[in-house]
Length: 332
Image 1 (cartoon, rainbow, N blue to C red):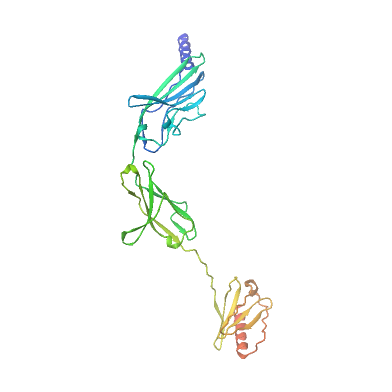
Image 2 (cartoon, helix red, strand yellow):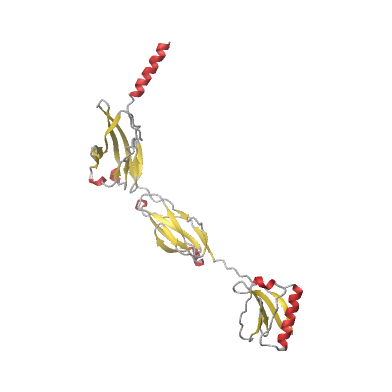
């Protein structure tokens, strides 16, 4: 019994050591006219086997031609019509797939991948895999609009873009429109992208795009519309006013100045009292207003003294008396 087990192990080991490389792929693929496609051909590299040659051939209309050859001297693309359009990955052991770009209708046919290895005993091992490639013309699909990362609601001055995406045989042409009243639309531009370097509120609106290609026989595909909203720049206005005192028709108020300082104003005629470490009071002409400012943090002191300059009219005295009385009442 033990002898039989050892015999089985020896046979399995012999088979694994002499395993030959083989190719993997698919039997048929479909490529899009003017697009790109990859014809798969792969294998698992085996110890003891070195790549000798790799080639691709095309059979079409009962004729066979080699289109790609890789040997000790490098890569060779033989037919002129395939130059610049076909390639096989380099420095990727086990991957012999053929990439075909800018597919043309005559590219349809039977593609055969052939790989030849040299074994350690200098013998050659050849494997082949055939795949049928069918090139078709595909009309443009209904496009989808992709918005930028910031979305469809942005503030004025921001930059953004919309992208029109459609699949099908290239080239695909795109056009942008903006919806107008009464179901009409205004043409904006051609191209896959519609961009705004600096948005304005007037850019708010409904947008859509159209896509078409030559394979669609003139059929135009229209996307769903999207709504772009541009908001005004935020404005902040701080206004703080309260009555300070009223004497014989003279009304005084306090509020914030342009630089964040506290202002105290009197009207009819205009009196303006500016509180600083040593405050000034000025009588202003009723037709000309001259702002006087005070630092907000300095208005909180109860020991500050207000002095008058150059004016001692009864109206002036009444105003100052009323303002001082109001400040004492409110604890300013």
